[in-house]
Length: 183
Figure 1 (cartoon, rainbow, N blue to C red):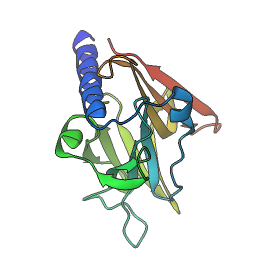
Figure 2: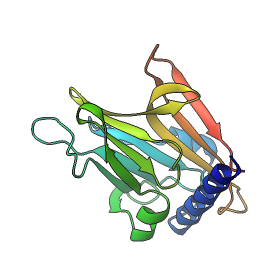
Figure 3: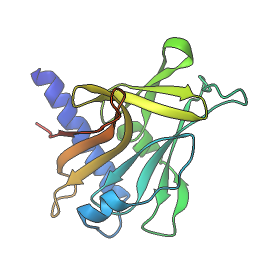
Figure 4: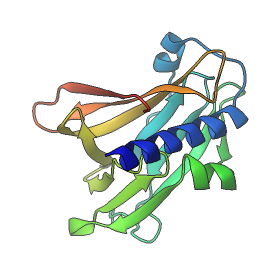
């Protein structure tokens, strides 16, 4: 348990470092939650931060038949809302430390990704009809992940106060939320 907590804390600190490297002017928490990301049937989830309006977007990659491209099932990139809203590739460091992910094949054409910064929270990617979804455990329930919010200390952007997972429960369709605090 201690080793798991230490790895989780290390991952959150590494994430905060990368977040700070890509940051611009700070915004309020309310503004961070209110940010808009264009709708897309392949949109899986986004990572928002208290540092600025930029978000990391995760989209499913599907073939013409609608199935996930199991060789390259997910693409991640910045949506630079603090600037002009342009799309920007993740840097190599961002892919290796915070926003990147590992992929494993899952059941029935799905894949499982594991974010570098949340290694203890696997996310199953499924293509379901016209939509693709990211399913993980949130607050002890299987849920469709919609957003991850990273809150850092205002005066110390390398120090993560918490990471919050937000989604919709698979059973019942109610909103679910879980806050993960480092250490």
